Length: 107
Image (cartoon, rainbow, N blue to C red; front, side):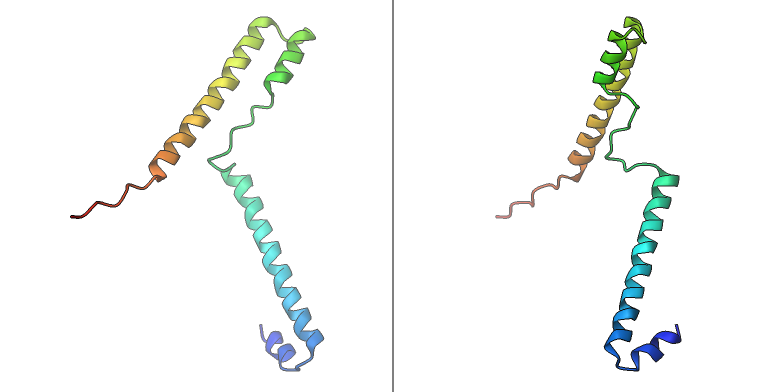
């Protein structure tokens, strides 16, 4: 920290620009590390739909090619639709709780 006052005291525009650029790089790198750690240890945001690894189109293709049976396709499809429905309900409940009540009407 003692280096910066010495650099900034020189009134050299290149030294000042270098100090500002260095600080900007440190802040951006720190923000990136925080975002990476958050995703790594706390998982995705609450508003995101969980990724089950397959879309319905992927499942249909697996079923058509014979890699999964009709029963497996039906179970996987129900799981995907149920997860999507839960995410929609969770988002609707969150949106409903965030709606503010109108102000009371006075006389």
